Image (cartoon, rainbow, N blue to C red; front, side, top):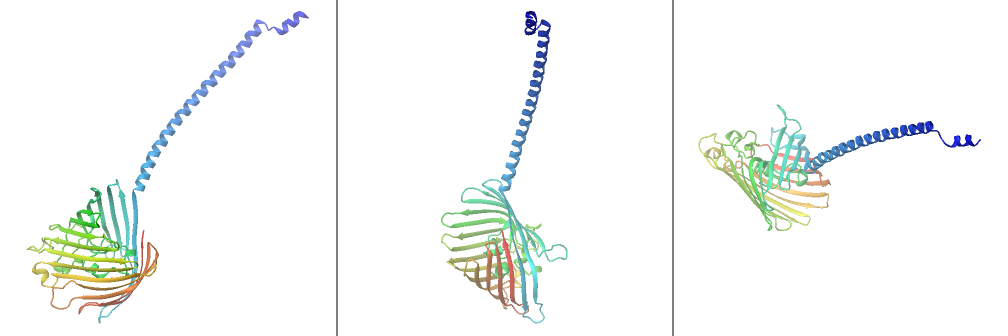
Length: 396
């Protein structure tokens, strides 16, 4: 019994060897598992590193996209008009029509704090093409660079610094369904040229603009009318370039005074022998006291040479005065008297006269409804329109 008991408690050498072999197998299995787990960990670490790099690249791409997006701006404006105008001259056609007069998109981008791009693309009268009423126009496309805090330079296609509405002509910014006839026919808004310009702003409220640009092309075929002489920078004849300048004062609250000039040494662009020069002048005042605003503008042109003088187009001029009253934040009323003449050099009366009065209602700062009545007195033999205009305009 004693021997059996000792045998039961003490393993033999063979049993011990088997136990050692079993433990070794367990250790080998554990080593293999540890090795496998290390490989998995290494794979995961490589995947994490790859994912981290991908995220970093994605962040960079997103950051660049976000930066580009934040520095790029989109806007626009447009207006729909209804004209119900009677032609007071015998045999003349009335004007009764609905027209999406213009649809405009703005695109701008800031490359740096000092360098930017701005453009304006317009579709007029809805449909353009052969036999259609509309046009597609690039009214602005220029790069502007800040030389310092007071001076900036630009190059490209830009609006001329002439008049009140030529540079600020969004429908929410002016009274009347249609743009006033003086700035339309004499300035002539909207008027853009291609070239270079320099703008300066000073602390005393004075600002200046000077430019060298493409010029007008006036011929007998278009009766030397300034509006007809715009070339829209579309393969524009450039035998004669133009120089323009403006001085503006806004140093007093509610007041704007402006004086602009334009010179071109040959408005025929070398197409007719002889050099016929052109001089333009514009001055306006805008004064707002509380809710009452008064606008007054005068513009004139002098065309040298006998070609324009023959038909009286050597002198062209116009003026208007417009008081308005902002009754509430949403309602405003206005009245305007206009005179303009594209053949003021004649001895006979060739002057147009027109009175307008009406109301604007702003649904929002960027949306306006308009209604006005016009009464026109035209020269003998010309169409004379009087009646109602209605419109809706927006800006964003």
